[in-house]
Structure formats: structure tokens, C-alpha cells
Length: 216
Image (cartoon, rainbow, N blue to C red; front, side, top):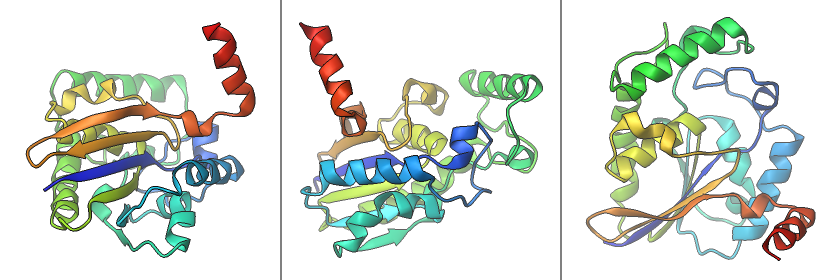
């Protein structure tokens, strides 16, 4: 079975913009910039013949790819694609104390302590369990050759580790921003990343002109 996955993070929300902690416990909408990003992504990939769309249970993912849904492409919500839950820190603004606490937890994860979590939140290992369940659903449809998946930042990093058979402790090797694309192909035995952290669709004409000037 061959399959191609286009995996994107959702567009910008106001909490993203303000640097406020937003995980599984915050069901937020896209802001104006996020809606622009959604339109940019659609314009760049509207000709890809997607057979199916999978999104998380949080509305910011559906809002990010709604233009594709509006064309009649079938879609399904999978809670397994939800963002990692940050527990008691959901909705909190950044502060030196909070940054220090997050840095401590991130260091634990990098060290391989993947059951560590914030109070009321989820650990990477817990997220992995539900992501594997979601992937079982996605991979159980061999007729869906080209699939669009919209999910969340930290969850995206964890899923990419799973698909590329890396330990979850290496999650930070996968950078991301709002509505960035990772494209993966599956050849029947393994996944390969063929498009890594692609944000070309978000560039303005001025960005492209600057890139050309740099190359000259």
C-alpha cells in the first residue's frame, strides 16, 4: 500500500500571537492572520487530488482547511490528533517562571523521561498512544492514496517521530510554524519525509523577491 500524507499545523490563533499557552484544553478560533494563512495554503495546494482529510477535534484545525472541505472532500475528526494537553498551564501568559518550568520539562523529555507531564496535562508517551490509534484509522483505508492531515505543533512533532521511527526525545528536530507543511510518502513499509517544514506557500511577493536577491 502506497500513501502520501500532507501534514500541516493549524493557522495562527490569537493565543499563538500573544504567546499564551494553548493545548488540547483550549478550543480557539483562527485570528485574521490565521485565516489569511488558510487561504494561502489552499491557493497553493487546491489542485492536489486529496482523497480524504483528517483533522483533530479542535475547531482551529477545521478552520485551517475549510476551503478544501468546501469543495466536497470528505473529512473525519480524530481526537487522537489533538494537541498535547498542558494541564494547569493552559491559558497562561508567558513569564520568566513559566519559561523556566517549561524548560525543565523539555529537558526531561530530551533526556528520555517521556512520562513527565504538567499537572492535569499529558506526557509524550500518553499522546503517542492516541496518535497510534489515529494512525490506525488513517492507514486502514488503502483506497485513500493522498491524504491531508491538519493538527497541532507539539503533537505534530511527536507524530513525525512516530512516523519516521525516531525516539520521541528527538521531537525538537522537527521545526514548525503556523500552517507549515510536512509531506511524507509511505511505500508499504516505511514513511519518508519528502518535504520538510515547507512554508513557501506563506511567502509574500516581497519575500520571493528578497530570496532572489540573496541568490544573485
